[in-house]
Image 1 (tube, rainbow, N blue to C red):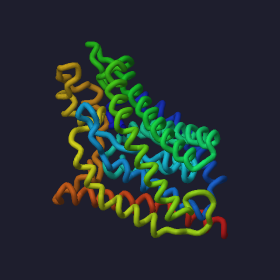
Image 2: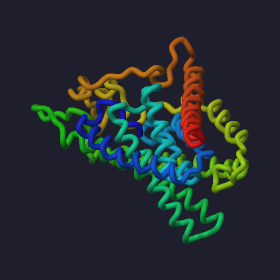
Image 3: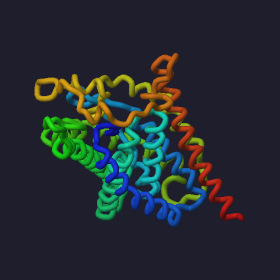
Image 4: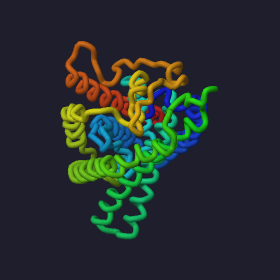
Length: 330
């Protein structure tokens, strides 16, 4: 679901970047108002969970791959505004350091995964929880919210892809950016997400929520005591197991490399060309592109990437929390 550079027009990217500005501003304001300062580091923990969950690629129907996002997990634990901030941070680290998701498409990726997913999922969760105020109702809300949120985010990405060939063409009538219209992008994205990826999101969210609620309840509600060891133990376990994401073969739909896209088969025939806007678009090489470290085996590079991304995100919010405490004390 990470839209790379080149797949969306610069104007489309600008629209989504502008659309996210008030969302980010409101989220920051709400987090400052609603989240106690001692809980600010938990935003980094939530971002780390999201980052790691997105590294666990699973095979999807059609030979593509997909992953969970974790936005709903953070929304249940800390609220949808906190989820927006945490997932935004995870997506930024992925784009800047690992080339996972384009910098130009950052606003669109955040719109889908840091806005649509957590807010939709949280609304579904609260609705069901209020209708059925019990433990079963709570878990039913989490499950349905996770499933609906992820699939609505995937639908938004499919529409963003599918509008490109309708809006942006060269003089010969060829698409400049993503070459697949809505009749291709929507079924290609939605079928595997409805059948598999949504269930993966649901399973990850429920399992991690149940673990946290039992072993580290400070992330659920207003419990003041910090029980950090179980949380960091779980993060460490997820880091160690991230190479499982390498078992999934194939490329996620809409995330092909520039040279790879001309070989993509749709409707029985290969595309056969590289759209001009993609060929001549903005280029960016991340520090650890695609989680691959030169000179290291693939598994070692993946492990190093998982560890580095987690540390960056956790430390980032610890620093922000420290700055806020110093500002309050002074």
